Length: 524
Image 1 (cartoon, rainbow, N blue to C red):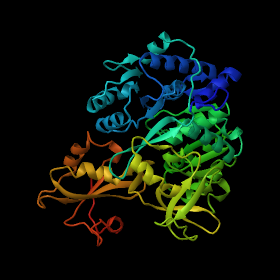
Image 2: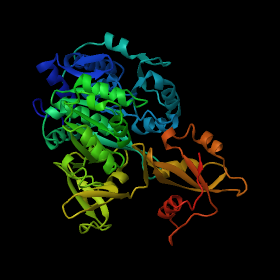
Image 3: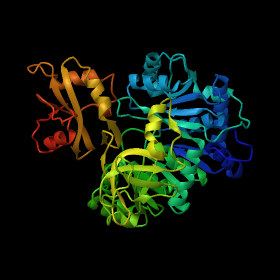
Image 4: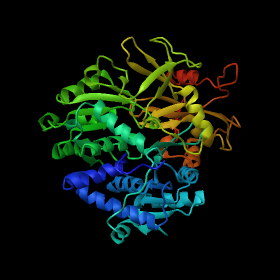
């Protein structure tokens, strides 16, 4: 049912609250642009009006295809203010992949960043979509100009009845079937996540100035900014693209950043910047890492380099709004390899296939429940029912718990590779490669990689043994079918794939063979 006025708030309402209470405070910093709460709130109302003038109504889906920018946040808040649903798109995806998402969610409108306009044009064509588009930072045939549309729209937007248990954001996650699923996070989910994050992390000063270095189509990028917004803080955006550790330190100093999340390879680069000990980094109170393992050596280096900051890591999923567990600074080295303990508002179990709890030390699937868990997978009732089987949400991750209650992720029940912090699902890559005319069978696995954590290797049985596909042929085949980060970085040609008694490919054996160099891997 719609909310009664005076009860419940969306994150867009939180923005408006701060605009009224302390509108002159800076809310977002992006490059040389400093946007106050009052300034961004007016732009959000103008954008909401512009979208409504183009037919967007409550419940409609609005796609967001952009690099990290202020316009991303403006769109999130404007769509929420309308009672519509944001659908952020991974800017690394190929046009065909974007087209599938547009068709699946039924997007009626889209906000597009100029550098991505050509990909969006192809995606709309692939989806047969006539979505109304607003473009910023460039041009796109048939699209309206974003800034001009804001200037022409009214600066005020009235209250609407909004059911806080309706979707606010649909974030697409890759699926083991080869097709992504839309995780529908409600307004209530997002608000609960922001409140829980705030309480779990202990104090508002450490969230006063957060730096967003992760892509804003991820829950990690959006989630930290929403928590900072809740306390009226300031979010500093890092541009998408090449990571520059010196630029990161410059921002730490200039903006007095108090919290930042980076992947281990990025922290390694930051800690290695010459003269870092001479920098004024006293404002930092929390430095988070995740998405890939960190060595004890790196953790000690981080602690030594940032002595006033708490070193933390988290484990989570899009389906729970981002975070399930937290490993606090004092345990970073003592519990190396652990992802910590459940945060507030999360109950987590380790179970066998019959939903029985397993003893500490034994491996089982991580299942959980929380008011932050998604309402559903968009338009996928069977997958939703399967995910919630037994009344708990099934993560698909294999974990163990030690005697002190700390959790360790052992493997992924869902067949997934993590490369450079990005999730790559083998079934999706296999689906594309299997259609190649020179491939009879293929199994995709992840093997260790010093730089990326893991890299993707395709183990192939060619249709004609004397004519296996070349790396160049596969690269060309994948160009318009897979995002660059999903494409195989290695190829192994074999005559047979190891299988168990039921015919399932034994990927554990393939990974072991690759690690032991029993399989010859050629660069792709």
